[in-house]
Image: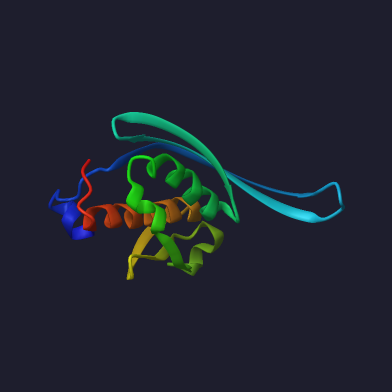
Length: 146
């Protein structure tokens, strides 16, 4: 993807306008400690501006759910794509919690597996970058039209 992008050979299937991810950790009415994740995403897809909100089991899952909610109506082939593995690495530990993070997402669909990478000082942003490339790679391999 990186090489193809540098040659301007990767179509822009969707364009991120913005996203917001919220995590809430609280005691519920039954006295149980619960953590809730919610993502709102605003993307341009198929010539339309689409705003979606979704919950998930953690911020990355919520972001993935919101993004797919916006994309699947246009790109049906994304329904079967699923996350196989998710890894986070700190690139320079001398910066502590301000360090750059590398997120690797292994995805699968139709019996094929691939790995994408996102890098940022913000772990959610790095996750979005890897997720974006995973979805784009699937659409590119399927010959999807913009």
